[in-house]
Length: 392
Image (cartoon, rainbow, N blue to C red; front, side):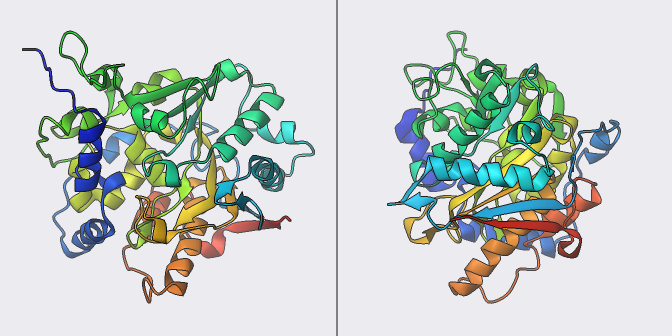
């Protein structure tokens, strides 16, 4: 029987408001509740993390070329009249790349991570809409520097889990000519999610050879399933990761998720697999860490560039205007765990300064500690080398 249901934009935003799309849309209350449940129960669902460990690492596997090293570049005028400034973002990223690598030239710095014959995917984050998505200033600066390093724009893919969200915030072929814009979950020109045979476009985008299995499941209604792709106990990796790109540059935003954060690890994990709605109650931290341990992410993510020009300290990972702020900073590192730990310190300090919380949550760094145990990076602050650069 063919599926005729087409949720469209109105129903999409109804789902967003209702929190039906998973942790990327969850309220801080639900996220804090999920983290609390992680702590208070020993009955966590089993996962297939052992499968990830069976695959041998390679020389570029996480934490990459510079384990435990983070470059932080700040500029007081990187946001003007609430808009990130591309020329300033370009200078900030340039300084960060040189500081991280110690290279003599910017081209040499970039070619430590990518080469002209590779397809490079930039993992963006558009889930909070226009107010707080990966900024065009940062994205265009990265693209320009990659092209200057000899990477043809035809080898670049801008991607996220939901292609329609990328389009909504301006990541379109009109704004980025010659560059592919890709998402796992897709809509056609009429706003539908199913092809003429009743098959979800998203189902055509998943690789069933690669999956994160967790012993928990949830059934989704007809409006939600296009945003989850499948139900059951398997979360499948997108073909964008497994088949379309050779390397991934992760470009998340400096945002909170309740009393924790949603930066590198979360942007990768929840943005690369399907069926995530079931994973939040008991496996929020596990998912953020364990999914990144699978080869499609572990062996392909070579660089993390956190867009901290604008960010938020509460209400994340959505965009609540009263909590959006200018952090005026960019974080760069090959080690996503170390980058997340520095970002965590920035956000928690801001939350305390603003009176949102009085002390660190006992579960705020759980996923970072898990990731460190999986040898994905350095979570111990005392072992992280932070290179600060102040411009302007």
